[in-house]
Length: 151
Image (cartoon, rainbow, N blue to C red):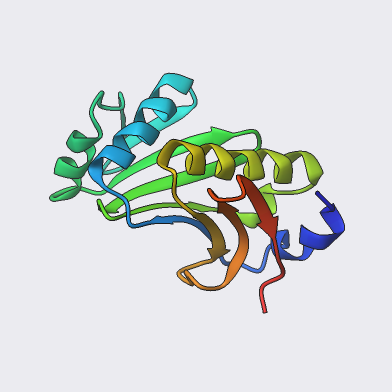
């Protein structure tokens, strides 16, 4: 990985970056959720109040129907915030300023790989709310992450 190639995408411009896995099911969510909860690095909030993460991700979705629900996964310096919008799409957001060097970029890249291997699906790191403005992409076919500049 060449930090100079991706450093521009990590500059803080006031907007977040998103991680997307499209075409998911509750089973994909469950695979990811089980790993995150087992890590010990997951915080879970309901209406801004810290709670123990539920054992089953379905409970997070049920809570989301009438509450503000956020799970925050700590990955090195990075805070990856997970929202439970729809079962068909896993989404995390992160602040690019937390990806402040090669070590953090490698951590993020490895996280994309882990998500992709768990779900056997493509994983995208994008500009906020821009599913097609891909910064990095994990391909399950090549089992690798390709970093690219956002146009």
